[in-house]
Image 1 (tube, helix red, strand yellow):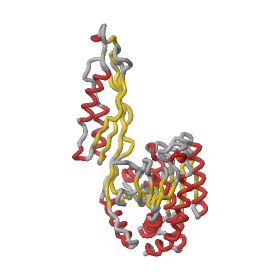
Image 2 (cartoon, one colour; image 1 turned 180 degrees about the vertical axis):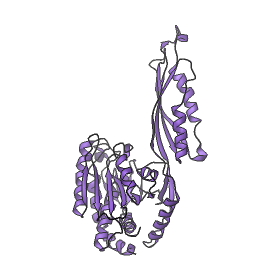
Image 3 (tube, helix red, strand yellow; image 1 turned 90 degrees about the vertical axis):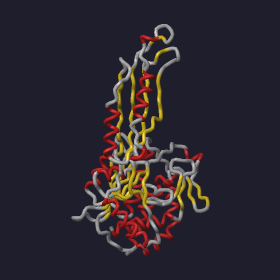
Image 4 (cartoon, helix red, strand yellow; image 1 turned 180 degrees about the horizontal axis):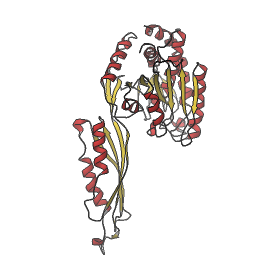
Length: 379
């Protein structure tokens, strides 16, 4: 077991890890800013090439470029897949209001937790493996993507293809608040329900109108009725729009709907039900767009076994790891859905993802890097 040795090597590297985290955070990278993303992709690629990776920048004409780094010769065994992303929810200029800073044992800044600390963890885990002279039992494929925060529209196919060729996937998203790893995630859907009615003067001839807003109200009640909280299925109509002025029967209205499910069966049920909505009001028309953009990450026996082995290896590092589930989605949803054992939440400990108090616990950097390196050597 290399765990204690890896941790011994990594603890003195804490300040170097922190310095690199600061550099990554200060290189802003909003999900829809291709120049900023491409610039950071080159930085990431150079750093992983410098530690011996066979690195490719995967050009993306409709978004930020992605980065793939391979370590070790590809033998007969399927490789380990490590996933991370370098885009953030924060727009350019956020650093002027929320600069990277250290307060006690916490490092604050936009994207620290989600998930630029994980870029650091992956790099130093691979450095530590090299430092102990150990040879991983299988090749390691690292995929850094540029669009996770907006649903991975251009990277999903890359992720699924890499997963199908891999033995297992390790996802470096942040853990739960108590440090627990994630063995289940809800699937995520985003639907738009548009209603077309007929405009008319609300005072002179309202009977000639067809109210799109009234019809939408009927449909919202139907949609809300599809939820099954006891099964983990939740639905939120989070935005509605419609009408022009109070004295006109509204001809258009729309609702945007967020759906969260724990099983693929529930995802299929909700998707079918929303797509088959039919008007209550004679003459009204309904158009549904969108759909389920992330399948659920279900806790399969293979995922449970992967966590149990990880928990055992964590004890050699002095870590008592727990598991849990979350309502948010990640790229781990994709790898799990294609049948690959997936463990998520392996990033640094902290809190406030997407919030102004976003931060990591600095001392978790060497610990989580040691855990990742241990997994890559022992699984």
